[in-house]
Length: 306
Image 1: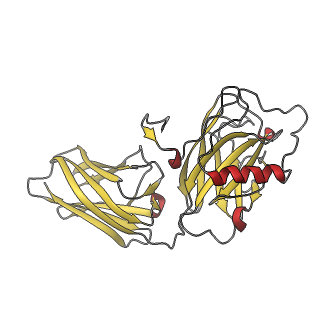
Image 2: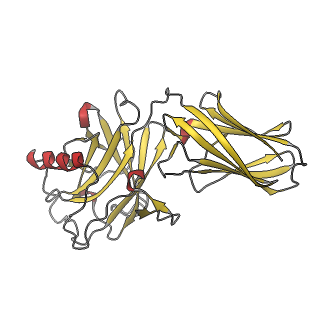
Image 3: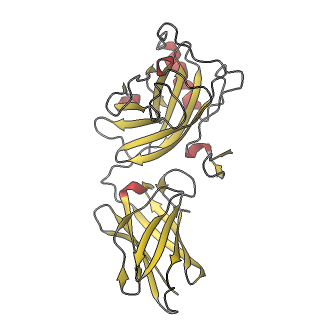
């Protein structure tokens, strides 16, 4: 079990925590999938490793950790949550696996920005891997991002994908992160909202009893009603953030709890609805939470009485 560096809570590796190499820096890691081990062997056999530019090396004690993804449209965005030694991108290779079928390792892009990335084709699905140099230091360092985008027909929903960063000199593994692939925007999920627990008149928890397929919350919207007063339709913010709503002369926040840290709505997730400013609704007021698809249609509703 690993821990989310931002929130300090347990985070399963399948939800997007990278494997940390050994302190000796020899790239020895425990891969979570046998297929991933086979995939790395294919890369070695294919002779995919190239020498970096003269003078560019991968520090022996390098520790690189990745977290994510956060879903942005059809792209998966991974964040470098920790890098103890900023390192030139020319020192790395990148690779992508889809359900255990691993692409050839290719040089990591050295130009920052979307559209300037490297092309890979695991299992015949073409993807582009872009690097964004967030702090503009020309090095791979903490808070930089990798964006993985399908460039042709999008793979079927919910394939398991693994992203690898490797040393360019010998192909040893520096970091990896696994995640489930992105559903097509046309895949409308079936969602059930179940139990509503009221801690008091101004604090309620709406739980997700089922969601199939599990869906990036960037495709979803929500709306809150207090009595006859409806809020604007609002996006669901990432886990750890909260949406602010002004409604019926009061101020509410709605926060999404991502139960398994996968950036997708699925069973076990929850929404916390809290009054933070203004008068509480009168006893007996009906409140409703509407979960909506990207086209504005309602997926599920939870209703309770204060």
